[in-house]
Length: 589
Image 1 (cartoon, rainbow, N blue to C red):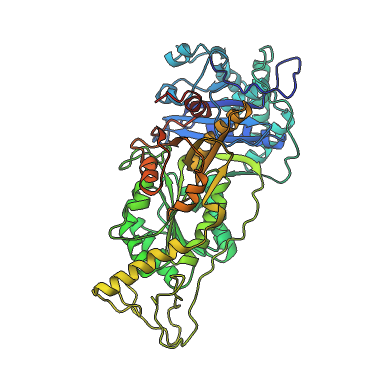
Image 2 (image 1 turned 30 degrees about the horizontal axis):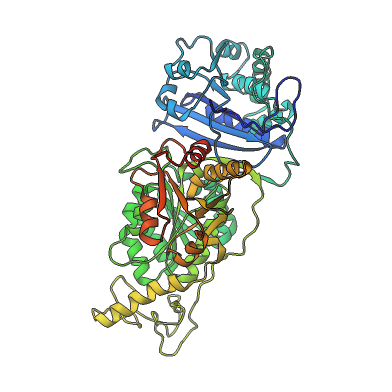
């Protein structure tokens, strides 16, 4: 059976071998404190010098539904959940079975649960995991203001060998606003939890943290997206809250105020997109954030931005669909509508970050490109990226900033939509003397005058497409890593597990290259041909049911004859071991 723990060893203390990574999960009903427990443990690991990743899985209920904080802590940077969980801390059994498939366990796993929770769920029994019943509830009740989740944090920290000093510091940071009594109760509960498992052998231990925590970031994908937007030059945001993108707005509202920008909570998505088009038309780089249902509502106005060549940025934090679908789970199924969801021939930019920290760089680049090319840019993040947190090295600063070609006052014979060599024509700021022109969604002449003439339509279609095709996007169009005749092509959040799978195979002496697309539209056939040169076998990995990414690749690129697909919808994450297995055994379907 495949081990649930990475087997590479850094040191071997007497108690237990030190692993490169440890995977654990806190589960419970909504309101039980699973997310708080995970956040405190992630913060404590960061303070102890470790890297880490925390993903969230929740039901659609406000309270009472299932909730899980899934963590992977490591001596090295991590961008994907592990193959399974070494430790599961269940605050109750109430709703755990609803997302059992997201919690792979095995005979080497340890499950901690309150001893009054009753019968163990069938999926836990079937896994062969060891189940340890502990007095979580009674222990918490014996402490004034004691909380069960803090008892669980103490037990988990002890079992993975996490430094208690870092845990105390994390508690003081997380709960500091609640006062000294709350902090004291949390510390007491954690110490009690440590005592509950003092006699149990540790699970796979973390060993020692590498390097200093100074300079590392603890950031979510939604926060990174907001930071990238502001660094890129966004000065106005209008949006209607929708899961799982709302945290972008919550983070940006005070940040924009500090930088002189403005955020408006609009009454709906239709108002949001039209507000940012108006703000951008007035000269302010503008953005909205939404999810799949909101993007559907914005499609007509996005066509207006294409036709009027008005730059805007739309961040779509994808979730399961169609319709309202699964609001709290991740999927990559908005790709088709982002690429082709506008009526008419409406060329625009579509970009996708491939890691949590890349949400910063890709959003910043999207702002730069939208402004430079005077066109809408759709950024496809997803729930897995947006609502997960990572402890990572500080991302490098990028040079991308909003750079709009603006017309000078009293430009002679001003033509707003003049056909130029680059395809980009100077924009007028409303009210600038001598630059009056018509700007609407109708087809037009170079001056902007509405026109139904075939020649004008052809000329403007060529202009709008040509400026995107002729732009030099450089190496950022994709991450291309490794060499060899076998390749993985993927995009977005699936890049993390794909990258790890490729690294494992290379460590065994197998040559595998990885191609993760960041720029999805316009297509880059010349660059892709170079990236695929010499590839004989290609595995396309994505998180959608209808193989949207494979269809996109086949429509735009020449792929090797031996191309296979690994496509699965959410909410199940794609794990490194699954990709590794499909490349190792090419006969797998």
